[in-house]
Length: 234
Ligand SMILES: *[C@@H]1O[C@H](CO)[C@@H](O)[C@H](O)[C@H]1NC(C)=O
Ligand SMILES: *[C@@H]1O[C@H](CO)[C@@H](O)[C@H](O)[C@H]1NC(C)=O
Ligand SMILES: *[C@@H]1O[C@H](CO)[C@@H](O)[C@H](O)[C@H]1NC(C)=O
Image (cartoon, rainbow, N blue to C red; front, side, top):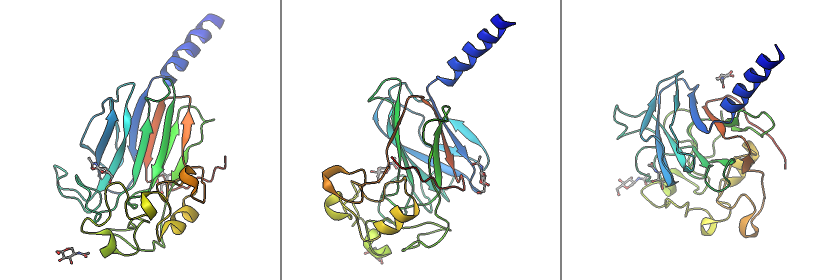
């Protein structure tokens, strides 16, 4: 019996340590995921129906981000939010992961620099790792297309965000580093998500928020529309 338990435990631990990235779509609509990859590989252009989930098949060293889109046509070429190319007009929430930097660990964050379209929670199989979560249900300073979406904190109006004036690098915020005109709403609403590029304390900008987490368990779940917001402090 003791031997059996030990075997079962070993199996569970091995499974829990498997490196994976699963996306759970808890939203009331389907989502289309566009990936940006700096290193390694991941499934691309993934459509997940309402209530479904997908294992994104990452390689052990994947370093990149997921741009979430909604209201897309079947091949994802046109979307209400997000979409294949960034023009500033279709805001989106972005989840960023680095499995490459520290082998056996993953560094993750939620970025709202390009705006907000769906809530997110990033959790791991190890409950001692902080599960960052952000949900914005009302009060966007500049409401975006669709329902409960918000334009980027880096620009003060829809027209200022649109037509390419907000560069892919987040150029609408101060020097592509410091807070933009609507960053305060974002960091006061979602404490553990980027509200401007250097919200992690880089280059001396304030406030310095707890927006990046490194977890020693690489079995990761990204839940869309979790309905909650985290408030972890460092
Ligand atoms: C994801 O978003 C970034 C930042 O706006 C953008 O540069 C990139 O082109 C997007 N990638 C895809 C595949 O949508
Ligand atoms: C974007 O540019 C087009 C063409 O110049 C213009 O018709 C449209 O009003 C602009 N959109 C915004 C939101 O400024
Ligand atoms: C899905 O969303 C609902 C409503 O926001 C929430 O109550 C529920 O806990 C969420 N489920 C998961 C698995 O995140």
